[in-house]
Image 1 (cartoon, rainbow, N blue to C red):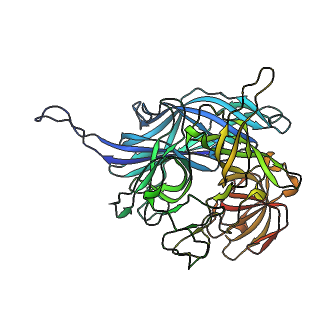
Image 2 (image 1 turned 60 degrees about the horizontal axis):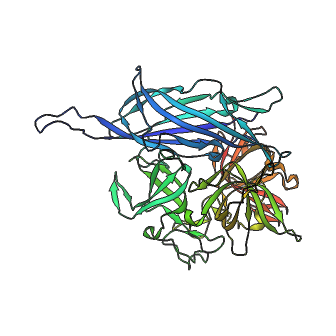
Image 3 (image 1 turned 180 degrees about the horizontal axis):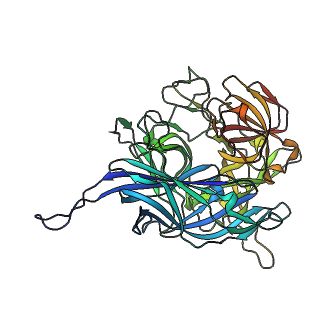
Length: 545
């Protein structure tokens, strides 16, 4: 079975606060506390479309002590997560205050739910499995070395799950739903103010915007120009759900969208249309951002303990009262007209933004395209003042996305108005929820598989291309479109390998980026892709150890 690693990062932002009580003539000893950011992420496992867990407890235990500090509170006593939605990314699971000190263990209270495995012979094409833990909850892990939280500082503990060893299979190699979560907890070093991406990049944070502030301030020598507060990991259950987290903007942050036409470039303030004709729409001011809008954030927790935004992509404003929301998940099948033009698709609905009670998750959903549907990539091509004519970010090749680029296996975000079908009389089953798309975004996604061959490598050993065979059966449904042509750039991050030349033909390679189906031939990095092939622009390439 392919190796799968779940990375949970717990970031503890520590400040000193004096808590006083009693009369004007007496006081207690001040207690130092701090804010805890819990980041959760995941790496893919072949054929798993969904893996639901409910986090019910999160406790740090002091070193050599039975005393602990709970991190959940009355506003998020239960946080529902889908590990499959966090493929190769991370987002904020929780933030609260806790005491400073040395912590040697961390416990995670978990209620398991269901797992969904792709099955092309079923209708709809997936099988639902009931998860069960083979070890008792809470799960307790030693932190090595111990986590030392300094006063007025920032600390991190990384909890890495190996789900390749955690997900149990039967004698035929089939997933059974049984889980024995295996993990290690490590405290990484504390960054400085100049460390790029602080405690590590967070590129899976997405949600709807609750509030916007444009008030500027300076902290630790860094200028913050305001921010947007996102509701992450939403739930339609009272007292459940993830936190509301503020993504702070600095002079380096880039705000993309909302878009008014397909494949709209994202241009940082200061890049004019004269410098780049693609920059016909200037960056929107922060105070123009609408609450209720969908947003995806690429950022990090910095040395001051703020969630600092690198890039923010804005989608449409979601209006639940009008049944207008965002649907997120992979494409299961594509529908075409007699001329072969894509007219819609079916998707596996992993989540909605915001959460909607009447829309069932982990279910087949039908999407219809219209002549007014907009198409974009998340992230889009980004042009900055330091690179006004060469696209930055994952879409460094500025590939357009449209109906003809939609393919089975892509992760997409669909914005539009949904319709609930009428109830069916048993034994008949109801039709799936449907949506007419106002906008479809090719989403940042991770695919796992095998490195096949190196196609090109420039002298920097970062820019080039290689052939990649995905392991997921869903990705293999259009065999003629394989292998995937993966393209890299100087911005691509290579993990467990120095670059292209040291990639090995072994299973477990993970590629995070943007996936396209290209009906016509394209040339990138000097490599020509034949028509009818899948193309992926890589943000990160991780080779298994």
